[in-house]
Image 1 (cartoon, helix red, strand yellow):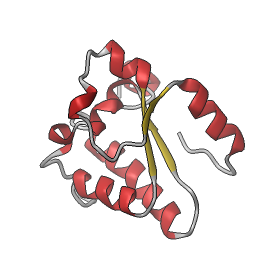
Image 2 (cartoon, one colour; image 1 turned 120 degrees about the horizontal axis):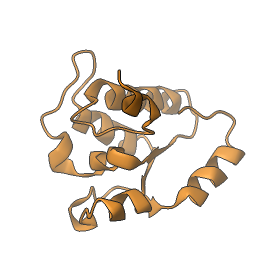
Image 3 (tube, helix red, strand yellow; image 1 turned 60 degrees about the horizontal axis):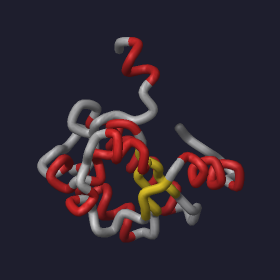
Length: 121
């Protein structure tokens, strides 16, 4: 892993499929135990909000990423995209998942983290 990968907050799902799948799998586990779960995708990770970006992607040890996201949303998980990351990449939000909960700034992430019993990054 190079230095850039270690410093990146989130990654493009097509480049780091297992990492993104793992995040959703862990969030699903939390929901199944009755915990509240909010995922904030930032940097290139905002691409997970684009259905065509995750379509057909499956890490070896997980269900397809599109299914993990669907399970997560159906179980009540919140999925937020970093608005500055979206804007800086000139991504059209019209193509994003309809079930995304919002396009937020760091203040929403910090507010949720301060109130949370546990935070995973």
